[in-house]
Length: 305
Image (cartoon, rainbow, N blue to C red; front, side):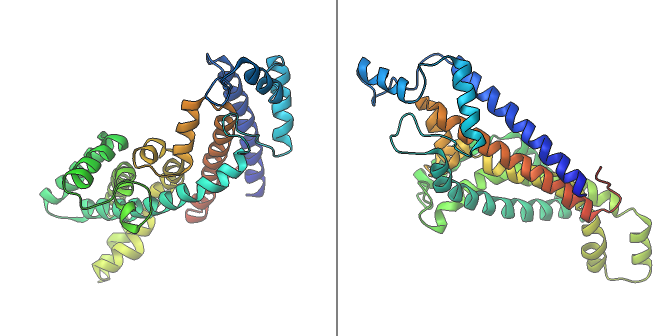
């Protein structure tokens, strides 16, 4: 396993290098300049800013300087906000995103497994159809569209739930629902199909023939063995909840990494965009590696090579 993890880490670094390089050159190809906003109103201010940040040098020279800073762990300083550094911005905003993503992940996991298990084990056709209808709606409706719907209904019309920031526990309700509906639907589908397959296995039939209580058979044997597809999906899903909440954070005015990313794109703050992209890319790679390791621990038949 150690060799596998080492290999995946090395591949991860190569992936980050390609991601960082692609982001750098794409930012340079975008029309406009990051030093042309309100902070740099005069031509002289723009000229001095270009000299300060090395934007007056050839692109390849800027690129090598950027890689040199990255090698020393320096993600750079914001072009738009003086004295604001990328690493400090991540340290300030990511805990907010992580808290929201963590709550969403737990809610999605519990909701998806419950929905999928109910659909698989229920003898009533309408229960199965209802669960799958909810799962289909969750896959079909984008999170930002659901978020706007929730704000209009529960925040503006009924005025029963707050929808700006995360000041109180009630503030989490609407963004968590908006973010979790899609993963709930996917987990429910995976759980249902896996449970239907597991319940037909010989060891389940044997356990039931011995008189083992049905609830014990489901929880101890069936559910445990049906979780592998869910675990495989859960790692990337958690990364999605941390990195895919850009629009939802902006919609609900949540001061997290996603909102900061969208704001910097609007302001053409290239340094912040590149730093946040690398950070979010590293998160996704890390969770993918952890998912592979956990899957191998759960199912010894999986060999990590």
